[in-house]
Length: 155
Image 1: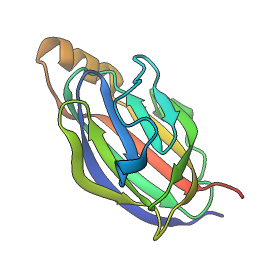
Image 2: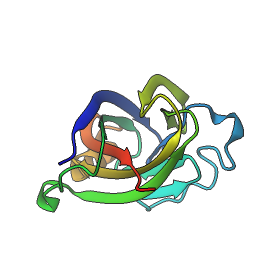
Image 3: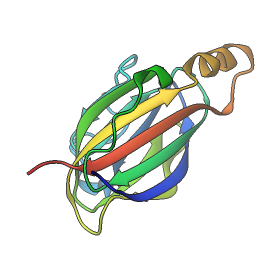
């Protein structure tokens, strides 16, 4: 059974329905965030980058990040509005949160002491409330909640 290695919380500044997770050392990315961002695609993977489509236009999303030593337990799909999985390659072992309006956030997500291949599952709830807040008030804080789980990809 897989073991939870690390857990942390970060906030993601969502702008234009988007935020991204990408390699912390972004100097050598083939396609840096937000280039080629695709509206309406919940999770879109690029080399060393993950784009996440939010239901709200402008708000702060709450993001719980877990790093596991193997595939985490399956989630009950009924507790999530949306979820998807993708592959992720890291050169440094660190990931940064990116916003379309503010750029790179200060928080760094540590996957490992060095690079490697990962699998990631992104789950989200609170999407309808985030969309409603965007239409009514313009912003919200922590209404849309994400769980991002990383684990080593099989060799």
